[in-house]
Image 1 (tube, helix red, strand yellow):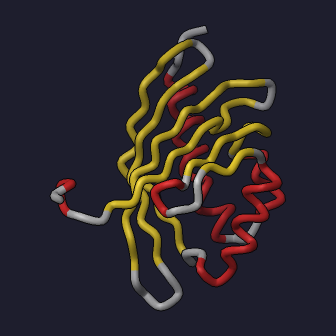
Image 2 (image 1 turned 90 degrees about the vertical axis):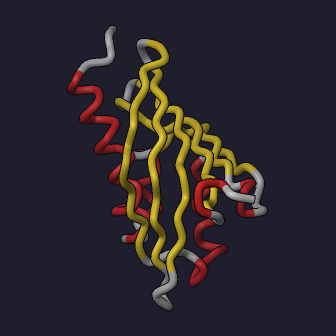
Length: 134
C-alpha cells in the first residue's frame, strides 16, 4: 500500500500528539503514540535506550520535576521507506518550569500496524551548539 496524503496527515498528527499526552501526564495513553516494543533512545542525554511502554512510563515518572512542562514539535519532515514504514525528523523545543528551554532533534521510525501508525523507534538528539559547531 502506498504512503498517501492521509498517511502523511496521520503521521504528522501522531508526532504532534506526543507533547499533548506527555505534558498532560497521560502516560497511560503511550500506546496511542508508540508500538509496544518501541525503542526510545535518549543516549545523548546519558540515559541509554529505553525499550517498551512500561519502562518509558517509569523513566518519565522517575524524572519527575526534571521533565519539561512543555514539549513543542515543529519542522516535521517525512520520508517513506516502505509501505508500512516511514522515517521522520522533527525539531523539538522543551520548556522547563523555571522558564529555561532547550532544543532537540527527533529521529523517528514510524510503523503502520493494526492500530494505525505508531512510533517504533525514536532517537532524541540534544542541540547544544549552533550549526553543530564544535
